Amino acid sequence: MKKRFVFASVLVTSLYLSSCVPQNKLIEEQNKRKTAEAAAAAAKAADQDCETKKTELQSKYDQLQKSVSGLTQDTSIVGTSYRDLTSKYDKLNQINEQLLSKYNQMLQGSQDNAQKLSGQLQITETQLLQKQDQLNALQAQLNAEKLHLDSLNIQLQQREAKVNELQSILKRKDAAVDSLKQRIQNALIGYANNGITVYEKNGKVYVSLDEKLLFASGKTEVQAEGVTALQKLAQALEANPDININVEGHTDDVAMHGSGEIKDNWDLSVMRATSVVKILLQNKNVDAHRITASGVSEFDPVDAEKTGDARKKNRRTDIILTPKLNELFKILNAQ
Image (cartoon, rainbow, N blue to C red; front, side, top):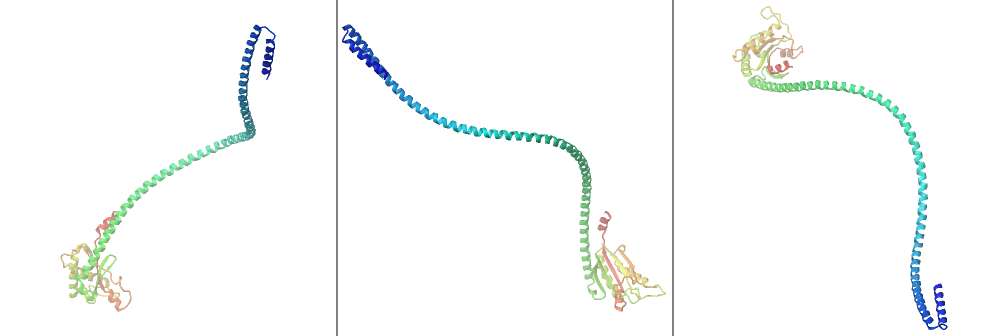
């Protein structure tokens, strides 16, 4: 506005002077006027440019004001956060100091405990060495026991093998006894209910002959029917060479008081057994080495009653057939 006022004053002054001055002055003044007009135009243009810049600056100023307002608000928030963080930092610092104090206390206590633990550790180490010595001794004992156990195990296996072998032999023996019994029964089938009884006892075959089949009362000579029965028995025995034969004479409990060859029941039982053996040996295929004759008088009764029937049962001759158990005896003797 001030620039416009100056321009107007210059213009009025120029007009006034032009009416009073000579022509050359007029031209000079006109030139000045033109110069002033040009300056005024330039000033106007400059003024417009200033207005434009002012508008731009005002816009920038408004934007800056907004930015300042935002920054102020952000600064307020940051300040609040800062104060909050400062408060928390102070609290953390306080807690840290408390923890540091407790840590120092614990460290002191740990040093004391470390000394105690060191002493205990030395004691424990000594005890551990003692335990190790005991363990080594036990290990040595265990190794010795293991060797002994291995030895026993080997012995046990050997015994089991022998037991299995014995069982196999006994099975064969039982089978042989059953077969022998069947052969004897077949050979003496006609005498089954006529004075001869065949049975098995304790792994042996018993051929029990009544007195009435073999002998007259008080005699030792075998009667004809008895001889026939014994000959058939000898035929069955010759087919079984692995059988031991024991002929056993028995009497009742009635005492004999003879004055001749037979003086008592002992004589009678032994002589009757010998008579039976001699008849069996008439078969040349029966080996005398496997036959035994014996007498037991009245001391092995089958019926201990003092009756006639009991005494009749007791007056008998038993032929006891036993399978040879050489294999079994070899195994037993090797134990």
